[in-house]
Length: 74
Image 1: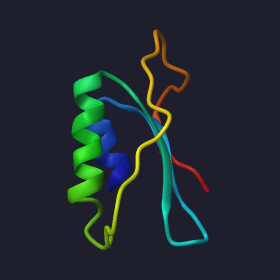
Image 2: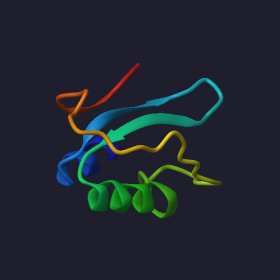
Image 3: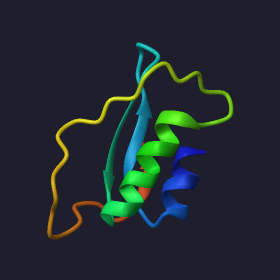
Image 4: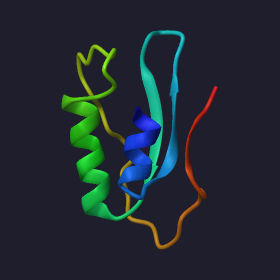
């Protein structure tokens, strides 16, 4: 669901589940779309997810994408 939502918003990046039961990820795209994705991750998420908190770190503007798509990492 996260990848689908990221693609709907035209974002690039990745997400992955961790052994601690958390999710890590990286987002790239238009600032407004990144903010929309962050709201979705914080308040909606995947249907089976239980969101206790969402933290976003190391945010910065970039001139070019470092990734070609949005995908799940394992």
